[in-house]
Length: 265
Image (cartoon, rainbow, N blue to C red; front, side, top):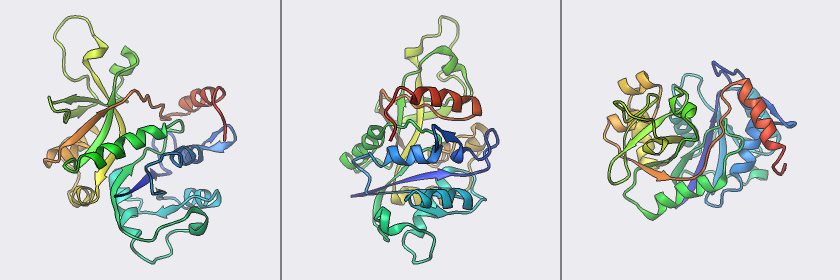
């Protein structure tokens, strides 16, 4: 089964406008994300889905693939679905295709939704999700989950929490601390942190974007709740991977420091 990784990258972030083009050690954030994703062994294709010509031009300038998408999308899921749909067309929506080895077809069975604000993303996290989907054809959608680093991370509304059933499927995602606690000490091992990278079957993705934003999705600002509300089961794959997302300019400073101790390519 062919697998494609799509990185949604919009320019108009509320907390950090122009975030994909923010500089990290002389390179843009989207460059760092793209280069790391290229190291994933399971991807047959990789591209950026963006709503802004500046990001599009920047990605194609460094030899990557980019697709222009609508600015009206409410979630990354909707954006990558539009990009996927354009792969089967002959419209001039892509450039640098020869250098990047673009496959102009619609035969990708597994789609990986990769966050565009994680310049330290581990390629093995992508491979882990792809393997889970390849090994078990009954899984419609999968995502990663792990433990919390500290209580501040757990209590932050910027981190999503997930409760799982006995078979390892998601029961619910929330920005609140779930499951709730009534007294006693707060024990980090009782909680699962959601790591926002997703894998979908092609048919599942097309079903998802055919439905409007759901009530829970709007309330929590978590797009995966649309799937749960419509009965799509989401398999949780446990991992030791700890993402370091860039949500604010302050996060950018932290990431720059982290990259000083890592190889720079």
